[in-house]
Image (cartoon, rainbow, N blue to C red; front, side):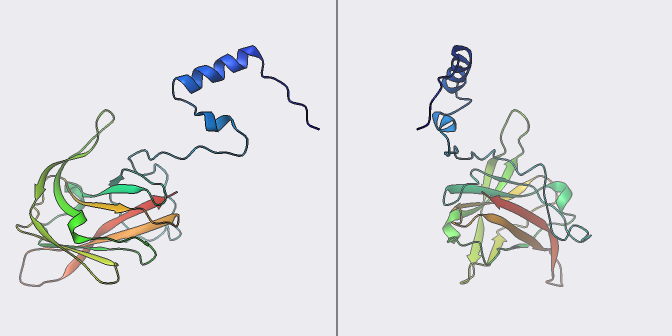
Amino acid sequence: MKRRFPLSSRSSIGLSALIGCGVLSGAALLPGINPPAVAQNTPALLEFRWDSDNDGYRKLYYVQSSSRRRDRSEYYFMLRKKDRKTAILKLSITVPNYFNTRIRPEALSLCKMSMGGMLSRSKCKEVLPAVFEVNEKQTAIEVFPDTPIPTGGTYAVVMNVFNPSDPGMFQFNALAQAPGDVPVSGYIGSWLVDID
């Protein structure tokens, strides 16, 4: 038979205060139960890649509203001014084939963004007219803006989906086609998304 010892009055007051102000949840005090992780609405400060010496990889900025499995999430795949040198006539996003969720064209939009900082969130200032196509295998998103995306400002493809049921790291690649005579798409960079 196990004996249970009460917490000292000093530590129980401290724990009650932390629970009351929302720093700790009651589940955090129960042995064997971990409270769920909450998305920070920002990408990770530390990023690990297997192929870290690849000079062709360029990290792009993104925001996701939730990183928990099977949770409804809003993704902002951002293209900042420094990420592109030419206007974009067509944008292609490759989706990993193990990102097992349904992407619907009507759940996608193209936005001109207002970048957030320490005290404010990034948000959509203006929705731009665009046509979206998602292939049958759900491994590619094609974005056709009505007018080419200019070189100045920050723009984002916004995606509303349920997160995959399997955790992991998912690399989305951005390829852009510039206006001109030769319709060739070039690599812009990648968004490396983490699902807990």
